[in-house]
Length: 257
Image (tube, rainbow, N blue to C red; front, side, top):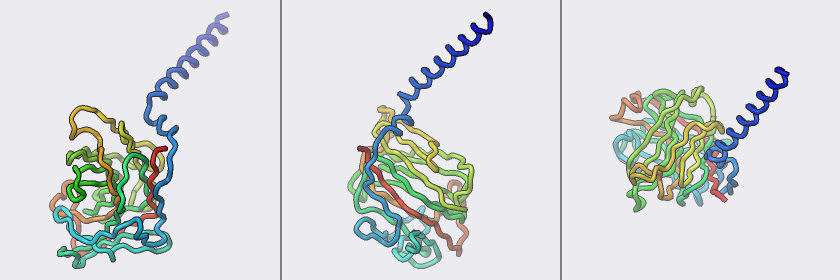
């Protein structure tokens, strides 16, 4: 009799736990995202420079960027886009690197790229969306950045009207040694960041102060690799007279259905 009661109690506990888990899943953005259907709006595996989609940057941002952007710093070979950073005159700067950005702007959906980061201290390899004063809008941005000061970590960040919200996480691998897939899902109510399809971080819309809310303005999709100056505590110190590269396999944007 005691054995039967024990089994019944155990079964009741099991079913209760299952029901509790299901209730929590129904309110979880992670589960909701899995149910969302996506439509691929942009996919580029970089067989060539598709000038109908992308612009090769040809200017200089100024500090804290050590380098300018010059189009010939980006190569396309064997379906790999390579960004090369080197000591070379480029738009009034003494170092040159590359930035690739879409002409169109995009908003809610899933953004992904598979890339291998630069290993040289003081460099930053990134995937992000951006809009700002140059586009006639507030500064809204969502970032995934590998900062070569420690390539076993990733920084997730977003800007709302110029206010940033960075978070750093351990990857469990060295991002400069091989390709990995990095992505974020931008929703009106949350942003979720993934590495190799594993959820790392979720940030929610707080509906409190405007500059601490999530981005609301559509942005251009941008990939770049750059050397920093004057912000060594964050970026590490770039060793002058050094060259570096970052490699991108593909970029994808999927909108919500």
